[in-house]
Length: 216
Image (cartoon, rainbow, N blue to C red; front, side, top):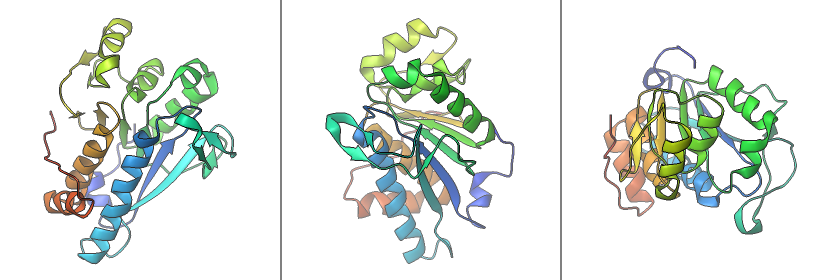
């Protein structure tokens, strides 16, 4: 991962580039929840003059630049594909039915390549299993959806897998539990990068009950 200046400093100077992976059967709220948080946080930051510019830009990426069928056949149009050379400050890997990305060398290689250039690596739900399969979590403290905890522990014994917590902030790596926990995690990232008040204001604007309970 990148060793550039802390994102907390960079975000005051320029927008941070957030890249979200899409793939067949991706869980809708795993990417749409964080996307909404970043959208609302941007409005809050501009309205409250926390930044003079939009703090986040979000790019969705899939293997090909064509419609992706998410869970329950929601069609999503990605912004870019694996061949695009994208700036990436924050990489978000969502969960869902992960059979396809776990078995696809091109997806795993893209995740490794993006992780190597990003400053902050994040996952939602079973997205942690994708990161683990890509070899990016060894020795890290992580979490995932409650239904995937035992699989993650069994298949990747080098990990410190914790449960019953919405997200784990390990500095350059932040992982969340299942589905709606991705919203909690992204609100935590907003608070971390833009300040605690920005996180609280974003949650209130969304009418979302939230308390920052990150595990260090």
